[in-house]
Image (cartoon, rainbow, N blue to C red; front, side, top):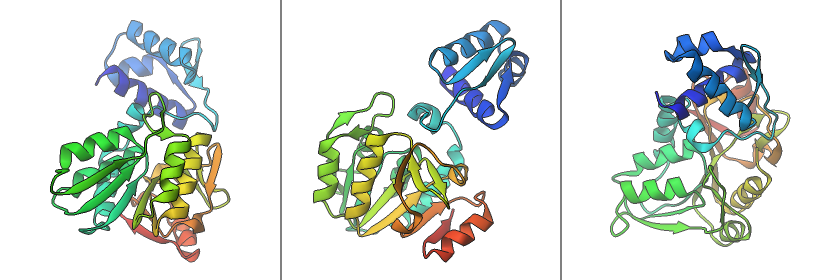
Length: 257
């Protein structure tokens, strides 16, 4: 396990338990106390947790957005299964928008073999994976929205992606989201990212949220849309059944990977 993966797991544990100790880090990751202290000092320096004597505690508010590389190492198998199930909704000849997100990224690998797709994205990792998986000569036309690239996240924000999603009317939009709540609907960490998603939701014929079960019951910093603004949610069987049933009663289809 490299340092990025270890840091991601440390943050995940702190979020779940509220704290972590240096001996726990040493035991879990088979590292020295010096490495454990160095990890905690680095995460504290970046504002991702608060260092205390003997360990660390959570220091994350609703506006904290875990970096893309850290999120990509969490629930990888589940996200791959969600991506595969979402890709089953895509047919030859479809125009699709792939929003920024580690789960939307997983859709791309399952597009191999599909033909005549038009794919628009405001996410550089997704664009790169499309180039790796599909032939731009035979399989897909790739459109990148342009915009201001967010560091670490590598999504594009600002007037260019907002205008692009106003002007392009895709068959299906696959939306990544930070939080799904019955009371607060769909929420995100970043205001500019949320605005891009709002424009995408307005222009797409079919709106599909892809999110693993950890996003349910969560409210983050910025409202994106009510749950009724989307047609489907693709998630995994770990999502709370009572909440899924209430979402279905709102008229939103729930697809389990």
